[in-house]
Image 1 (cartoon, one colour):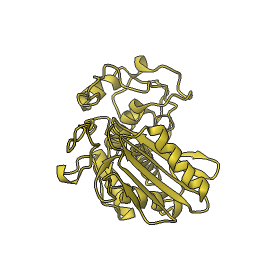
Image 2 (cartoon, helix red, strand yellow):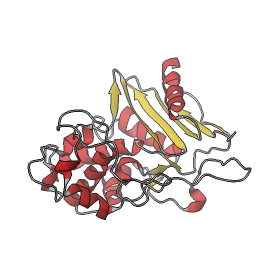
Image 3 (cartoon, rainbow, N blue to C red):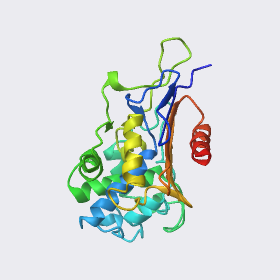
Length: 273
């Protein structure tokens, strides 16, 4: 059996790492990226760069009259499917670049699986949202993330392409081997492609959800009563990050573990607090 390196950070206790995990190595955070993309959207809207209700065709070459707005994309109510069509299996997002995304955008009215306004969790929707933000802001996604979120919070250890020596990938079956992570630095990046150190994720949770230094939590975060949270999972990495209204917070990141178990561990820690 493969080891399950685990890193747990909370407001109440010192960091706890097991199995070779580390607070200062970059790990994939999967769909937790969406919470940061949603924060970029909110900040750009506050700055007047774009409007939350802008139709997607204002910023991208989509057919007119789709009825899909930027807010629909951020809320998973665009009607777009969960995944882009035609993905591979071994490294599914490796060949999904900007050219492939724009080809889909040009026929967006034929790709939807539900009418706008109905919920359908969509990685594709967030890929389209990221492209729209880049078009509106006149800069790449990472530059927008840096300017609107990371620099204002003084968080540095978040990137799409960490140096090989700074990455922490999941252990393989054989001693000393590592699993090859998915390639997610193309068009899918705004939906789930970021890497971050666990301590950087904790700083984001505190800055965005506890101290609320950039305002109220943005649309990308999920909410359940007093809890704001988001999770994320790639091939071999999973994360849960959340904070309660009373200031308690938790970050759990695991390699090789089941994502549902990662979520459960984070929620249990918040309940015990």
